[in-house]
Length: 45
Image (tube, one colour):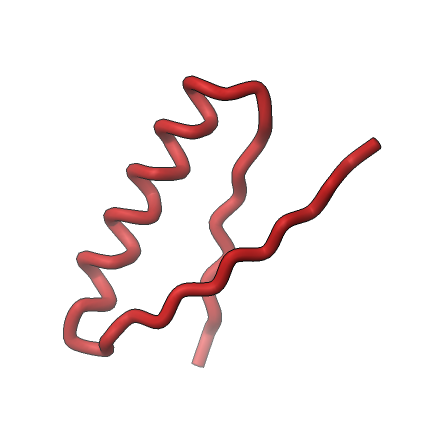
């Protein structure tokens, strides 16, 4: 049975690139070390 969890983050516009890089690192760590799948969805605005 799948469970979906949505976490939202507010990132300042001048720190957007750094924020996305950090989120990608978190995603990679969680996918490699835990028995679940994390996807990173980013808004297009």
